[in-house]
Image (cartoon, rainbow, N blue to C red; front, side, top):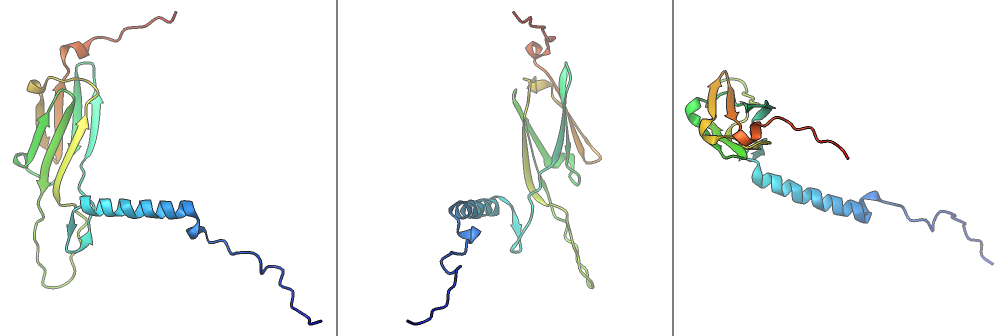
Length: 159
């Protein structure tokens, strides 16, 4: 009778989490999302850049909606604002300034290109009475509410 070497762990398979079915699905989803963002995000010189999306603040009072949008580096003539009763859309383009240097390296973290920001409004507004002001890189929009929206709050009794 021949002597054989006993290997107690030889029957156990090594578990590889990246070959586990849910991980493969997550990986496939991530690749699809990356392709989607590669199409939507502007690129330049073969490198990926983040899209320029201006930051916004909204305040609602009893009489009006106030929106501030941070878009420095533009002139008022380069900003396009469209208003409906339920939303406001702001479009523009921040153009890249070309600079040349003989020596050294230039690094820029500024975001250039076209942008569009549409903001859904919580109340209906009077589009013909919207006022816009742009100074110090901040766009201020004052949007009066429609008369029906200005009603005071009504207390509802619970039965």
